[in-house]
Amino acid sequence: MLTYKKSISIIVGSLLLFFLAACGNGSNEEKQTQENSESEESTQVETFEHAAGETEIEGVPEKVVVLAEPLLDHTLALGVTPVGSAAHQDGFVSYLEDKAEDVEVIGGTNEPNLESITELSPDLILGFGGQHDEAYDQLQAIAPTVLVDPSQTFQENLKFISSILDKEEAADEFLAEYNEKADQVEASLEESVGDETVAFIRIREKEVRVYGGTRNAGSILYDDLGLTPAEIVPLDKWAEAVSIEALPEADPDHIFLLVDENAEDKYEEIQQYSIFQELTAVQEDQVYSVGFSPWVSGYAPLGNMEAIEIVDEHLND
Image 1 (tube, rainbow, N blue to C red):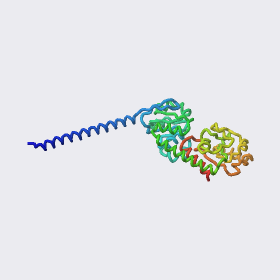
Image 2 (cartoon, rainbow, N blue to C red):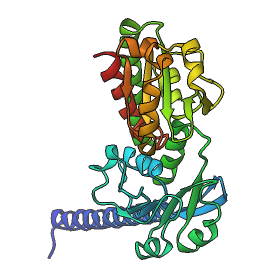
Image 3 (cartoon, rainbow, N blue to C red):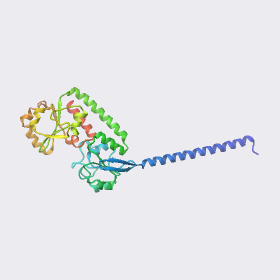
Image 4 (cartoon, helix red, strand yellow):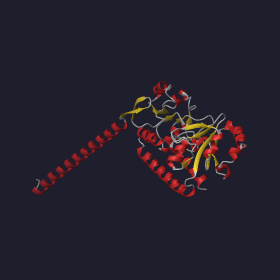
């Protein structure tokens, strides 16, 4: 026969077991609800407006193909390595080679190989508006395709791409690092260069071009680093063809000089001109030879960072 104390113990034990079981079921249900919620978030469909219209993307893309090296630059800056990228004939530009070792080349920038792209089974294709408009429908048939607006700053495009790849934090970190670097170099240039004028000149086979202030080289030199443009620099344009005879009037104190491979003979000829030899930058040995990349090959985060370091090396030597 059960005593009163034993009866109470049995009842209390039973209630305790029931309570623990209920808590366990509640915990499992809560865990299942959380897992279902996370699953729904990972497969959420989001619509992105871009240069060619609107594209729906499900979840966060993991296999990305880019159709131009500046876009390869943007994704690498975000810590995302595409499975495929367009490249120049000789491969990726020098400052991206090491970072893009595992990236498959899928044709040229203006002629992406659709078959190669298909074989990579991407879940996102990134191209440029204007440059890849004609192939857009074919690309969209392979995978969701977004055409980035090339008229935007690299900062704007980095933020846009980061929103697609769920890398907003990485974008913020890179831009903070970039701004800090630019500010440091600008401060040092105020000491070493001051108000001395700067021009970025490109010798082409059939023309001499001065880069302005709206994009690429000029934007880095005059906006990001606060250098003083020579009078010949068209600040409201990307670039402008000029005559050699116009250089002495502007007479830049410093010249960043890009000579195209097929224009080396033309540059040899220009060097013989007395008006070129008498330029301040030439007289003071302040003509700095630079390559096509990163100055002209794109307008992208890693490239611009590389360009800032090049300016720092030349003007703060």
